[in-house]
Amino acid sequence: MHHPAKAHFYRLLPGFIALALTSLLLSLLIGSQDIAFSQIIGLLINPDNSLDARILYEVRLPRTLSAFAVGGLLSLAGALMQVLLRNPLGDPYVLGVSGGAASAALFGMLLGISGWLITPVAFAGALTSIMIVFGLSRFQTEQQTLLLAGVVIAAFWGALISLTLSIAPPMQLPGMLFWLMGDLSDALQPTVSLFILAIGLLIAVLLANPLNVAIYGDEQAHSLGINTQRLRLMLYLLTSLLTASAVSIAGAIGFIGLIIPHLIRLLGASDHRSLLPLCVLAGGSLLVLADLLARTLITPMQIPVGIFTALLGVPVFIWLLARTRG
Amino acid sequence: MSLVISNLTLSTPKRCLIKDLSLTAKPNERWVVLGPNGAGKSSLLKSCVGLGTHSGIAIKDKAISDYTPKERANHIGLLSQQSLTEFNTRTIDLVLSGSFSRCTAYWNDQQHIDQAKALLHSLSLSNQAMQITSALSGGELRRAEIARLMLQNPYIMLLDEPLNHLDLHQQKATQDILLDHLRMNNKAALWVEHDLNRAKAIATHALLLKGDGTWKAGTASEYLTIDHLSKLLDTPLQSIGEQGYLSVSY
Image (cartoon, each protein chain N blue to C red):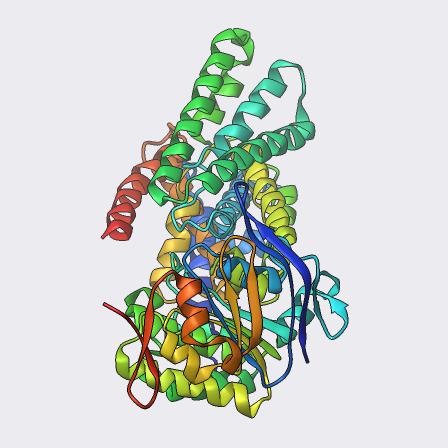
């Protein structure tokens, strides 16, 4: 008999790749400026200096790729965080890690830090937040209590963000507001985030086998041959890095990290060797599609994409909570 | 491959559980570990695998902390008392996690998959192989964990009440499978047990932990006696029938 997890992975993979390509292509095709399908394809193969080409290469393509990267980063961070906290309901947004990164970034901006330096500041915020949540999870094994703690921490960061916004100079306000809701309209530099996503996925995939053992708890994992302390440290750093990168590009977008790993587990790919790569493909696709809706639903107005993921995510989250209880 | 414990002391913040314990569990020796609740039986097994206090634990003249995690897992393995299944994995995947320390490729070796299936079959879990673990009964989960430890196949096995949650039929069947496995592979084992009659049936040696720091260790015939066990458990015992079954005197 074949390896059940491996066979299942190769059954699912083509569908997920097709989903990713379709969502990327749709996002390139649809926008406030009508550009024909044949023209898009033509420009992708053979770029020229037309206005359409500039829209495609300077707006749609970078934004689409940013959306894919952020979605991939968040869903990978979610899947890893769930193992770290040994709680299938872990998510960087729900448990306040995104909030921590956003608070730190905003505070940094208030102190005059700008550009790429925001990312390490956001990273420190994410790391602080995840350590608080993890510290609490060591005392409280009850899943619901941990979630509550995460929600309270998220609320605390929310208050800190509001405070920062209320004392910030009015000039800076529009640039800061997006941290609150998650927005991709300024995300036009996808290179770094795609690079971090690629590195993150590579490390995550190398950790997939230990992660499959880590889900049975520290004691079992240790006796099965895992260096549990080192694994936990790596998960801390990796989850924080992934979340911080996503947040510094697009603000605090919620629920991707929760929904995507769950849907993939429901499809039977709970083995991390399959789960992690599929998470990146599906998370990227979902955010590309959500952003497509966000920027086209009420043209020419653009709705922050974080609102869409929350509208979709909250009902799913409640459903999952009810399922895990029952 | 022998497990050597020298001068191990285990305590809780409030009291000393085990003081200066020294013993050597050699191949083919099955040490049954007996004692009242909270006497440090599970803590001792955790120490042996390198968790918590573990100074004085060695395998083959090498301190447990000097092994790499995978090397250690190939030498000594633990069947914990409690299992965690917040994540829905398949039974076969739970068993396959036992091959982690020997796995070199990204996907499991075919050989390990075949072994896992054979083990599930021998523990009458073939039909549950593709089921998710949260759908298993307590006894089925326990047997899957035993299959995992047998796949891990360490020289020394630490079994913390391995037959918990099993029905009577499965207790006997699984006990036989475990004993066969230990005997055929010349393994050393520490086996925590509350059933005194089973202890007598499986043990070659006994470690009695009182929970106040004192302990007794030696051969089964020397220590699995009415006298020793009555004192250990603070319960008057009597011997019944020709087989000498132990029972509480009511």
